[in-house]
Amino acid sequence: MKKQSLIKGSLVLGLAGMVAKVLGFFFRWPLIMLIGDEGIGYYQLSYPLYMFFVAMASGVPVAVSKMISEKNAIGDIEGSYEVVKESSYLMMTLGIGTSLILFLFAKPIINFLKWDMKSYYALIGISFAPMMVAFVNIFRGFFQGLQNMTPSGTSQIVEQIGRVIIGVGLAYILLPKGIEYSAGGAAFGAAGGAFIACIYLWFKYLRVRREMGIKKVKTNTEVLNQILKIAIPISLGATVGTIMNLIDSILVPQKLIESGVANATALYGQLTGKAAVLVNIPLTLSMAICTSLIPIISEHYILNRKEEMQSKINIAMKLSAVIALPCTLGMFCLAGPIMKLVFFDKYEGIEILRYLSISIPFIIVTQTTTSILQATNHYIRPVINLVIGAIVKVVLTAVLVPIPSINVFGAVIASVSAYVVVTILNLIALKTKTKCKVSIYDSFVKPGYASISMIIVVLFSYNFIMERSDSNSISCLLSIFMGIIIYMIAILIFKVFEVDEIKNRLARK
Image (cartoon, rainbow, N blue to C red; front, side, top):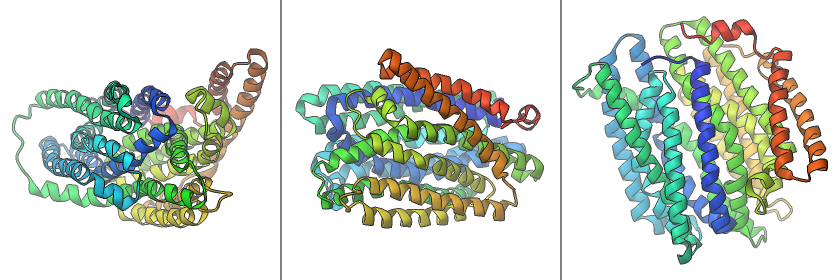
């Protein structure tokens, strides 16, 4: 299977992720129309527990990707399939075990976390997903380790289509029984989509295996030990990151009630079901960079190609800024038009989106630096940094949300502050651990100039078109389109990327 460059791999995964996000709106939008903010709140309460499993198991596919890339670099093809076999046993145990825990102990979990008991059906619905997602992640790790992102990207689209059809279909069918049942049907869509994606990836895997002439894969417990050595610290780091969301699901509704807010569940739905969903769109692109980056950096690291590793780190940081800065300015300045464009008359939560968007560059830089540190065998430092960030988030959430004049914005302040802290700590670790230098001016200031140029044109275009069309949708879409064009031109004018950098440094050698 042909390798892809960092740019091509990131582009494939990024485009697939964006298509999946667009399809996700075909899931989210009718869901909001069907069950409103309260129903979305029930759905979102269950989601952090599911994402906790995804985070807990996330170290395994990263380890698979890293180990397969390293084994291919030294010509150990059979060893790559040993990695897949051993990791499958591990993920099967984690996936089925988590599904059983969520299904059998749903009510005790809800009582312990002091959630509304109507969230029970959503938790039951989501409980089927871990066992399916476990196998999907193994196959994605395999293809990412081969440095070909196309199967992973395609599977994301397939998974989202299945999720939309099954989740929205069940939500509609179960709506007459109550919004809590409808939320449960929507939650089951995650399992349905993952099952379809798993079938697709399984056939792709068998095809590649036949092409490589691999018939029987032997058991190798030493490989399992290596997987665990890499996966455990990565999973711990991802788990800590997900705990930040779990903190919101536990603390925010409780503290909102303490602040005297009557619609605590609805506000939580606006925070996590609307604002966070929009903020997560650019994070899809940044995760594509991170996913492509790990096997490439790992290969250069194990082969001691320091110059190439430095160039890939520089370009990854620059790509992160190129994604983060315009998205932050766009969501901050056009929070109202974007919410009205996406959610029509259910656009409550504009100010939440505006201020939550400030977290985007810090989350993206955290993701990128974490991936670089993991690829260079520095697994523990990102975990420690995320723990520190989680502590900051817990303290600020507990202190700020109960204040009536701040309420839900306390959770926003806590999230932004937490990722600012982690970003600073990760950048320090990147410099001290890898000895690689990141140019602040080239990586962040130049994209900043381009982003400011873009947002000026976007705001002018929006107001100009709005005055003449009186249509928010037309004004928002056309101004964003104009912004994309101006941003691309500004990137060239400010020489964010040099021509030789794109031609020579990003090409696979």
